[in-house]
Image: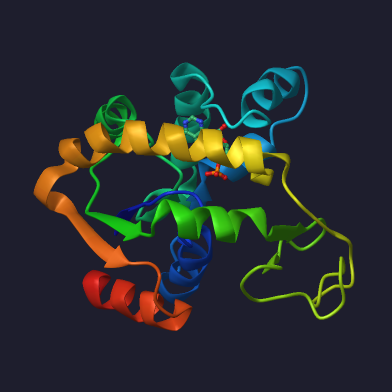
Length: 204
Ligand code: AMP
């Protein structure tokens, strides 16, 4: 099962993709994570886009994605999170492989801003917390699970969030149009377990 998860930043794509990966055994592939893991000479270029909330050039992200999708664990299926972001990227993805399901998790801009500006990630184990919503860390600045420091991503600062939402809203119009009736929309502002239940109902 090859699944694309769409939705603006903060809609819960990453969290739900991780859950789906656990349930299905397919890998969760996040292009944001692929880019954050870039090292060496490319890192400076990648950061210059990411830190300002801008999309990195298609050529670069498509190359990274192709390499990841060619790995053995992604052959039978995957849960793609963060790609495609534009109709052009969706066309490129269709050239690489056939997508079975396209799911959009919908939340308003106001909700996205509230969630993202409170989001903190653990430096070590990757756990995600939210000081505006939940789960709040039990101890301020510390991961509940491994005790390491939690930090706010540079692109989760207010100005970068505004820029990312603006880009998302502009680009997603054409993207959703490209996928047309294939898109299944799920209400993302309900309880996190209900979102998961709705997703599983649509997929399996
Ligand atoms: P995310 O973790 O999905 O919010 O992505 C974080 C950042 O990575 C974005 O703001 C972009 O700078 C970059 N990025 C992730 N996916 C893509 C993509 N499909 N195309 C271009 N840039 C991307």
